[in-house]
Length: 196
Image (cartoon, rainbow, N blue to C red; front, side):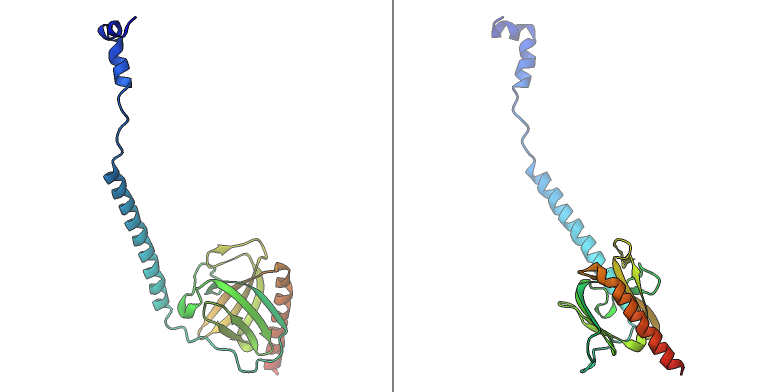
């Protein structure tokens, strides 16, 4: 069959329809969707930021964090790792953000007879006096961060009217057990001396 015959019999109409050009991309619609998506992401980010600030305002009754003494004494233990945040004691999702306690960061911990010195590059440092220490345990989660069982050193301490849990992860997780033992023995020694 020749092309003219195909055209006359109707087969050519199907062939002509298949040879139609592809649809042209509607760039205005695509740009509109991208702008809409960018605005949505910006709105979500802004709402998260406002929520963070609101939480900090609610925690405004938290006193200023103590700073390390000029001469804290010789180091019993030191560790480098990550600070994963602080929460109300026993409530691992109730993050405390006041005074920069909610900011995750690298950390250098030093334990002395005076207390626990928490040095955070790029974030606010703080100090936990020895008499404020309440307990050290191995945990697996804090402030929305979940790790393997025993992958987190959780230190409970008193600050103002609150008990706070602070979570640390060493670069060498095997160190956690020693930290728990030494901190708890310091607490027991302080309680024994205070009872006399």
